[in-house]
Length: 305
Image (cartoon, rainbow, N blue to C red; front, side):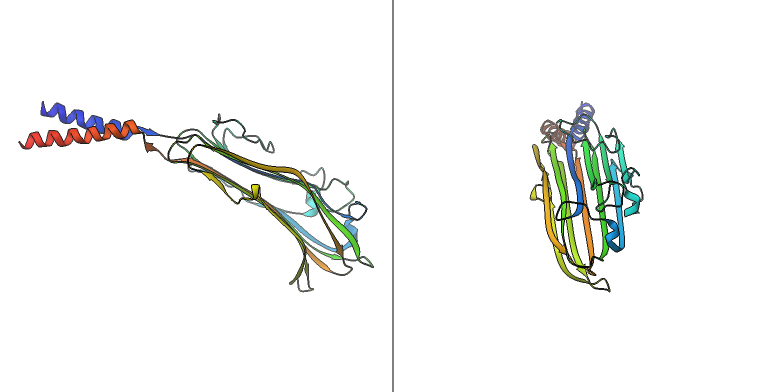
């Protein structure tokens, strides 16, 4: 009889410790910049030939991780001439699980999730100046999505950056405009299970600065920065379905380009998403655990007596 009671108590303890609850979660961030270009006051895109020095580079970096498995390709960098219309642009993709296709930039709208994946995607094409390939402007997209079902952990991180140094060679000061259209989206969701979490964030920065002949910063012409939803991070550890977004919103900065002045232009699009769940005992399992421990104590007391 003592052996039966002790065996029963051990079985209850084992049942209780195996009764963990897991969560479903979603984290999603996306930034889309279209029609970015420098124009004159009449709206005509500035010719690249107006600049006697044009050193420009664009880079992209993506990574994703799902349940301890990583997909982290080497980041790539291309010159401005490599990202012309029709050349394929700057394109990177890293995904695990049943993820959206490359350049699909699929926003997760259904909750709870139907797929398990972590995906990071970037694409940049077109140019800020007129190189004679058409007046389309630049188009940059960055996307991170994580969709988890049950006991899982996923992260993704995507970034596009571009920079250039220009010396303007006009015989007089030129009134210029920098235009772009910005659209962003953020969504996080969990089913409310204790231990679940979801975080997403994104940032867009653009600036034009003046430099001396030694490339030292001497001043700022214009600057603009936006976090998605004016928040660096949104997260939830209980039931949540939070989403923010803006756009498409047109932005315009008027300024003067000065003959012979050197300029540094920088643009950054960056998104990040992570979600996960940590197994925690369910209330019923905790009750069983208590009964199991009590059974062990009672059987030991009887054995002593």
